[in-house]
Image (cartoon, rainbow, N blue to C red; front, side, top):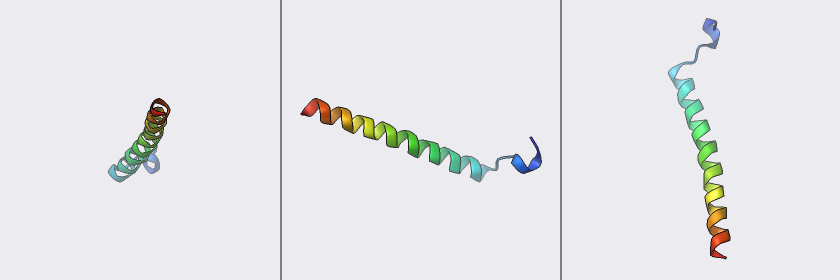
Length: 40
């Protein structure tokens, strides 16, 4: 990789937070849907 494409610590932090937000968002929606279906 060239120097322009090296990831800085801040880039990694932003990427990690973004992926975590997507993962927990999908996981949270699935969990809520599952509980809603089981309780009704």
